[in-house]
Amino acid sequence: MDVLSNLMGSRAWGCLYRRDPMHGPRRLEVVDIKSKQITVRWEPFGYNVTRCHSYNLTVQYRYRSGGKEETREEVCYDTLSVAPQHTIRNLSPYTNVSVKLVLRNPEGIKQSTDVDVLTDEDVPGAVPLESIQGSTYEEKIALRWREPVQTYGIIKQYEISYKALSSFDTEFDLTNQSGKVFKFSNETSHVFVGLYPGSTYSFTIRASTVKGFGPPIITQFTTKISAPLMPGYDQETPLNQTDSTVTVLLKPAQSQGAPVR
Image (cartoon, rainbow, N blue to C red; front, side, top):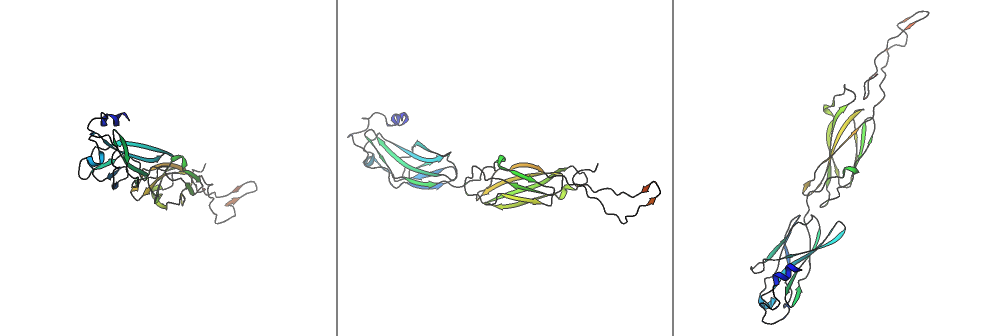
């Protein structure tokens, strides 16, 4: 607390009588809430409360970060205006914060009542790449994922875009192999059907809160190759037959994700 001691100066300086502050700051209220900062205001006070010209006012606030409680303290410099206020910055979005003011003079300390506030929501973080799993089949891909580690609010929906990038079968027209789906917050999986065998697809996933979409995460999966399709024949009798040979008509097989060899 060296910085506080320096601000207060000598214990005797400015004090006609050595007495504690009359009471702590009153009417502490939150007047502005954003995702990463809050502004508090309180009732102005004078010498009749501080009982000393040498005093200081700090704001103490507590919040949870990474599973543990953090406590911070900042000096309030706006103490003489008719509507004193202080802005606490660098907070995490959608976090409960407990705030109080502490009035100190050389003889004692008085505190305000605590005020609890929830910071505003923000766009969420990215869906964890390691959480994305894909089960691949010949004509479909089942995709699964988890919500972002930093939700920064209440997840409203997920947007998943997909697009075919390439195929082992050069005969496939991939221009119509793209699209976009939306899933509710409690839906963290989707099965993409109507895909081409032996083709690589790119998937882009992003989550959203009421503040908008967070950063996208991109991954790729490839469908399995199907066995080629054998064509039908109009007749089963050979074209030509001798005592030692048979001549038949062979039609090319239809590829399903890879060239027929």
